[in-house]
Length: 125
Image (cartoon, rainbow, N blue to C red; front, side, top):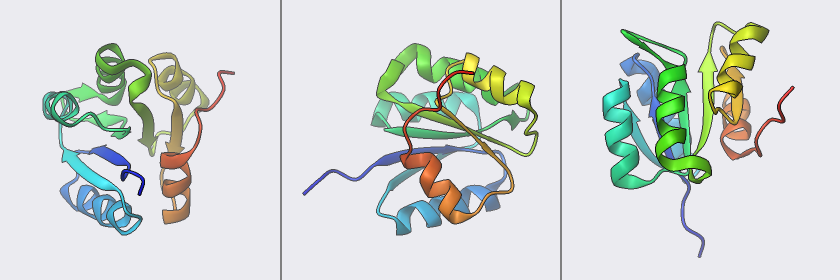
């Protein structure tokens, strides 16, 4: 039996965090949730997630910073998917430059979420 994928969801919206957690749990993922950078870093250190789904716009910080912190501490052991309603090419490029493996524009479907969480990294442009 294979080990379930552990996904860390980092989003400031409690309703969205809960919805994402439910969707991912239905797919058999083990889900951790955080609403800020500090909690995300703590959970990642304690639970070694396979994937982090990180909202770009967090209050008082950015998903870019969360991405950089997770990659600095865990390297390729954690794949980071940045999700954002601000889906400009420059935001995508900067997310990838800070270490994100994938960029998921909002709104997205459940199937797009599953694909982003399970996909191989996006090649750099």
